[in-house]
Every structure is written in structure tokens, then in C-alpha cells.
Amino acid sequence: MHLIYRTFLVIFSVFLLSTSTFAQKNILKPAKISAGIKGGYFSTSIGFLPAISTLPETSPSFGVVMKYHAEKYFGAQLEVNYNAIGWTEVNRFDITQEIYNRKFEYIQVPFLTHIYIGKKNLQFFITLGPQLDILIGESKKVITDLDDQSYDYYEKPVNPFTLSIAGGGGLNLITKIGHFQVEGRFAASMMNVLENERRTSTEGSTSVLGGVTFSYLIPISGWKEKPKNNESGQSIEQPDESGWERRD
Image (cartoon, rainbow, N blue to C red):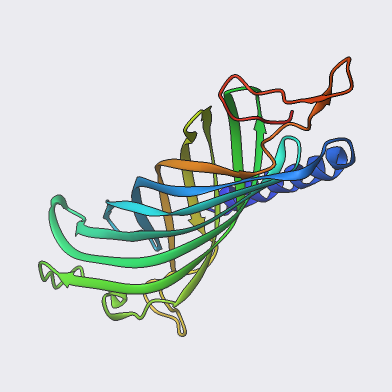
């Protein structure tokens, strides 16, 4: 898990350096802004230290998304999403026997760097940045009692907030009726999901999730190309093939 964090931080630092290097050459005036809705499906789990035999949970996710690009190829993507993270503990000698299930419901707010390449109607993009997870509910259930497999985390309270690293990549299709975006997304918490005020049998509890999301966005501003003058001095518009007038 620590290797994942270090890798994300290195990549994020490179992205920020690249943004500052090319910023002055690719300023967009006005900035490109688009916003819309998104939904997807995720596989989630909690990693414990020491390790516990668990199975991942699957959960739908939905929310709203806004993209802001003040520079060509670089921008920001802000989201507010609902997601549920959980796991099912199983018998370490028989993984078909379920013992304990717990699920946490979160409002997740990622602040992502958005980098894209491509022109006209199709763009490839990468997103990366921090994510704030705000707890809004939880559920838990002891399915089977095993005397030799019972952990103190069964009753441990959950932290109301966690901080995660999120990232992904995908494609953005620009059409006459809006922008359609598909993305593979991964996130890992940088702190324990469960409170750990004193030394217990479970020292660490970090969340991991991965899945696919689909977004539909509507252009708000900055997508019309500046008028160009023809030979007679009159301004003319240069429409994009997709129907949205845009600047490159």
C-alpha cells in the first residue's frame, strides 16, 4: 500500500511540474467549463493489518462533475459523489463461509488534475489528485460466530472523515448533444478507516476501490471559437465538426 501512495505522489508531482512549464504558452481565454452528471460501479474492500480473510463488495456510485480548463491540455475536475465501501469477512479455513459484513456510505469529494490530449471529437485524459471521504452512514452484521476467529474491529467506530488518493484515465467523446466521458477510476485511503486510539489486534484498516464511471457533461462556456475576419473585414464563426464551436 505504501508503494501505491509513493507512486501516486511522484506522478502527481510530475503533472504539477508539467502544468507550470506549459501554462504560459497555452492559456485559454475564456476558460473552458463543462458540467454534468456521472454514475458507475465499483469493487471495494478494506485492507487490514494484520491481514484478515475478506471478500470485496460491489456498489453503484453516482454524483455530479464539473471540468475547468484555463490552459490547453491541463485543467481541474471537481466531483461530489455517493459511494459505499465495504467488505465481507470469511472463514480463513473455508472462504465459502461468511462470518461478518460491514459497509460504509460516503460522500466523496475528489479534487483532480485533468490532463487530456487529442483534438476535435475524441480526447484521451488522465485524472489524479486527493479525495475527501465524508461518512454519512454505516451497517454491520455478524453472520456466523466463530470462537477462534473473532476480531476487535467488529465494534470499532469508523472515522467520520478519511483522505484518499484518487486517479484514473479514459476517453471523452464530444458530440452535438454534449460530452460523453468514460473513465476507469482507482482510489486508496491514506489513513485508517476505523478508529485506532489504542493498541489492538487490528492495527491498520485502509480502503481500496476500483471501477468504471460514465459521465454526461454540457458545455457551459469557452467552447466557442473567437470570430475570424474574412477578406471583407467581417467576422465569421468557425464551427467544429461536432456542432460545438470550440477553440484549440
